[in-house]
Length: 408
Image 1 (cartoon, rainbow, N blue to C red):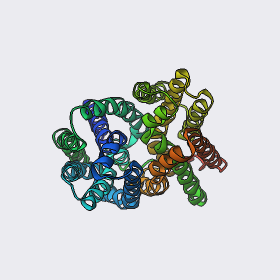
Image 2 (tube, rainbow, N blue to C red):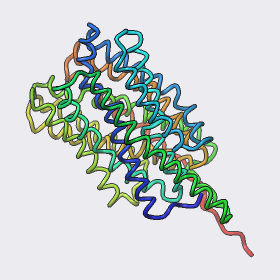
Image 3 (cartoon, rainbow, N blue to C red):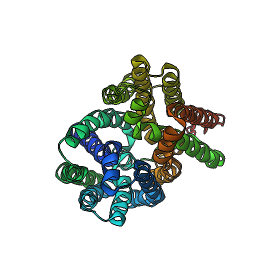
């Protein structure tokens, strides 16, 4: 595909960054803030609401491979456009659901729609429109999208001081409809223009970037990648959904929200540093580093207890790890397996990751309730170590031999 102009490429990355901020903020990060109000509305324990959300994550994981195939077949930007409209409609339906069955169906539907609009779809859009520069573009995109939690945690708390969770979901629906839908529609138009320019100019065929894992090791590399993503995904999902409640549980009180907001800037810092200095660092090394940061953050909070310095360092380290993990989620499959069938590969990996991490919100809530914050944090350390082992094992195998030019 003919690459867009530099101006359109910049607008593409900024546009996707904006829609990722809104998508993650409205469909993901806000839930932990609104969950207690949802539980009170239906007269349920809060663990039940997190259990419903865990089931919705599992549903999103189950549909991810099919969504990946749709992205390869019809174009990822087109899928994102449909997803934005669907997200707005489902948020409205969920906000209007006073029947418990309708509410559960709405929450599950929200996470299914998330597969159409969040990172995997955005990464596939970049690979399809600017394949030659996709890895750097993924880093730039995640740099912008890293502000999602920093913006939407305090915004959701502020809105919740004045509105019910139902009214907030209606506001979020309007954001998806008024901002994300037009941006994704424009990106779909941009993809069509690039395809038409390629067809008109009939450029020489360019082979899609290949992977670094030789054919006989692809299956084992996939299993190890999926294992690393799953373990890391469980650990991160546990911490992200319960960041503010967890900091409150260790004794920070009103400071928990303020400390939690440091997570977002730390994500941005890790991505910005990688953008400036990480050109020669492989995605595999970044995957290991991201897991190490998460282990470090959980360990610091275990040791520091209710001291503010420990909580701040915890939020920063977990933010650094999460920032790199988001880059790795898109760049590592491209690095290992190549651009051909990239959407479907992302979908398969997401299915494994989400199927495992789906239990995280519920399981972590139970661990905090029954065993305390220290037991819950220790489980994160163990999972992080497992992810490091899995990612490290991928690098044991030989890479493809570099192509040698045929003699004239």
